[in-house]
Length: 439
Ligand code: FAD
Image (cartoon, rainbow, N blue to C red; front, side, top):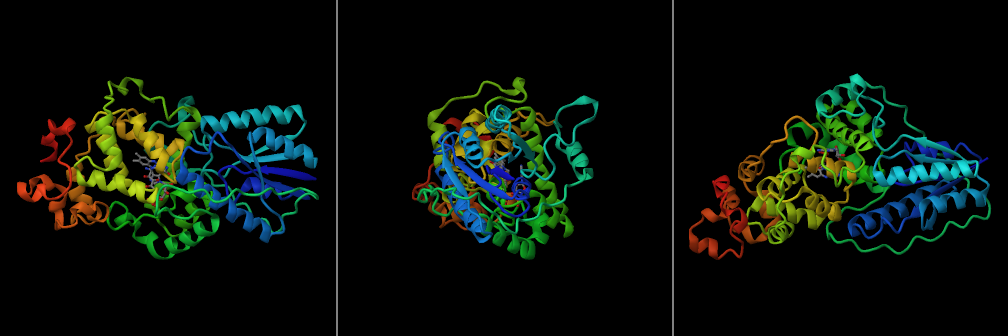
């Protein structure tokens, strides 16, 4: 028997149910199809993807197999690989975005036409999207807390064993991986399961226990930074959740539930990136190119906002607290359409994906389907609370390095001559009227 596994965002050998199932056949084709429709959306993520593919290839070679790489339409190439090798089965990790669902549906039709079995497997989330549903016939939970309650009570599947041996069909050419593309962020972390497991080991040993206390501390950087690895499936979310639960790290497990939460929302609302969940709150957004550009460039004149936006560009990642502050600033303060924020984050974030990026943006913008749509974030109060000494700001906004302590959060309060000497903008014209916020 021969099976093809179409790998998409499950780029790992450990606890990969679709790969493990395909490896129960006599011969396995671990296939990745480079999809031109997805390349170029984010140079950072493309680079991370290629690093992850190179690492996966290495893992599979160590097990006697290889990663088969093709380029083109994933459905066409997968069916071609199955037909060329006489495979009876194709396995795939089920996914939720509109694009992934269309791909899956087309694959389903083509498999039926060619009399090939298509087996869908879990693996992208801890609890499969749709596995827990609200009472009363609802398709997805709208509010996190009741979802968390059901999610916590749901049984978790057993982890899939990493394949010991992978045997490719005879005569199959694996295909070359193109050279490593350049990313945009100089300090982006490295992709791949090996790097993910290294980071995971350190995290579990050294930092997990402090998470509940430290996760909101901007300069302390006390979060796992595992999100890019979860995004690409270099790390199994279930294996991570189990490891954390075993250590009693409830606060961390709860965050992993947030990730699952947005997947189950996306399963029902696949157009989350463009369509508001609460259309009544999708109000008269402003389209102010100048203010938007200042926000993107980290030059709004509000230091904590600018620090977050610069961290995004430098690292392809941003601290969650800074994501909240910068997103609220764009939507609540400047009144700019949240979709423009989604698009900018999506270009830079290594962990950028439809459910978490759009879900969190909608939550912040008030268009989400939760119960508190009118959240406001005062950036200065946030800064004083989560970066009390200004360390985070000085790390990313070198123009303000010379200002000690918390004064760095409100440079406009410095004596005029000092402020002028800073080479740092005053608060944006467009929100100066609201400057009452900033006092
Ligand atoms: P940790 O604090 O170590 O948390 C562990 C894991 O839990 C994370 O890796 C992540 O998978 C999950 N998690 C934590 N917080 C959230 C959350 N609020 N929502 C969903 N999952 C969460 N996360 C993404 O993975 N991709 C995105 O595109 C994304 N865009 C965001 C946009 C905005 C405007 C906001 C406010 C948040 C966004 N987040 C996104 C959620 C969160 O900021 C990141 O998951 C987190 O900062 C990643 O860092 P970490 O791995 O160190 O997180």
